[in-house]
Image 1 (cartoon, helix red, strand yellow):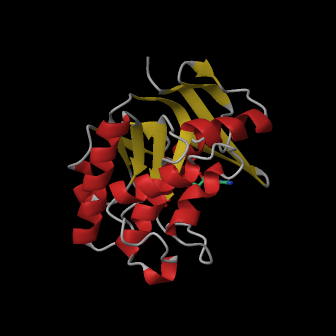
Image 2: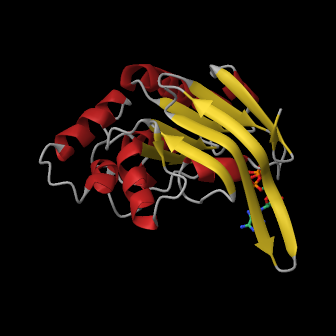
Image 3: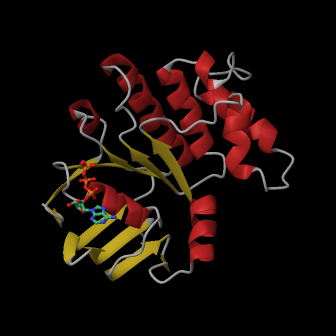
Length: 220
Ligand SMILES: Nc1ncnc2c1ncn2[C@@H]1O[C@H](COP(=O)(O)OP(=O)(O)OP(=O)(O)O)[C@@H](O)[C@H]1O
């Protein structure tokens, strides 16, 4: 069973009198232990598709399944809960809170979890991404690559099934980008999660188990 499945997904945006059809019947799936890289020209629908997978927006037509559950018509509360428990997010510009140190940033998505182990888990995750010596550093005391490692550790704190990454190497130089991709490839195996990553970064395709190209709202 695929951990993520989109079937015949159509997404229309109404902007004023115009309707933009951003996705025109997209089928997509991702499996545990697999990194799928999504490429395509600007405006082709990549972010829209990631928003569907990330339950940030609902399709106009078609269905979305997460771990076999039909979440197409889930309420806002249900979506929020699915996002919290099943999905991890990594962004181009890291999205770390500047006043929190590395451990606090990693713990943040699990703050309302009463599990006392979350602090230990945050430390363990930071050690796994090579930041055991930087636990109490704030983002401005970390390099771009280190900040992205904190963000990756944060994305894993609630033990998601799927990690969604929007241009994760977009703000990094090539060499640092490669170390982040190595890290993601390793964690994908270790955590047995699916990774879906949008990118313009050619080197990222080399790390993919599968490349999905989308052009004008259609998967090629
Ligand atoms: N909220 C919105 N309202 C109206 N149109 C939108 C909205 N979001 C996206 N679109 C349109 O949908 C199409 C797909 O946009 P999307 O952001 O998914 O493309 P993309 O492939 O991620 O582009 P980029 O690589 O430039 O980020 C574009 O034509 C865009 O203008």
